[in-house]
Length: 142
Image 1 (tube, one colour):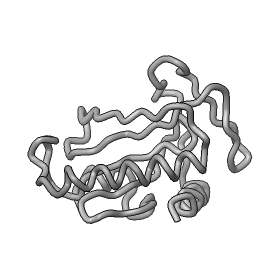
Image 2 (spheres, rainbow, N blue to C red):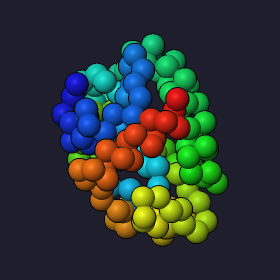
Image 3 (cartoon, rainbow, N blue to C red):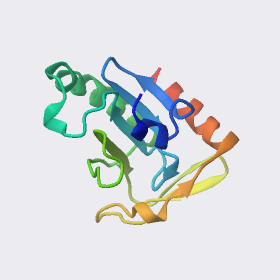
């Protein structure tokens, strides 16, 4: 697995996996259910991924949309491919909603709604809280 995956907490943050992609719980949650969809390869340019990875992207995004629909009842879903600091191909998947969602005794407000997401307004989860979020998200993918 590449360094970008490790930066986002793999393997502890692993929610589900495909042949070419992994879905990780984003350690910093700007909105509840925020994920990282990352290619397993060492590729640093989206167009350099093999055709099979591009084809599998449809399966991965459909699974994400189903699971997050159940888990957080989002209004919109933003896929952000920023790759400025972390070079390997990955998307930040940010569920968007008006208002707030409650989970684990915390309130997750979409501070940017309806504008672009406020990534700096994230709730950082670690340790047991992070593990609980991963388990909760895994159940949504089941």
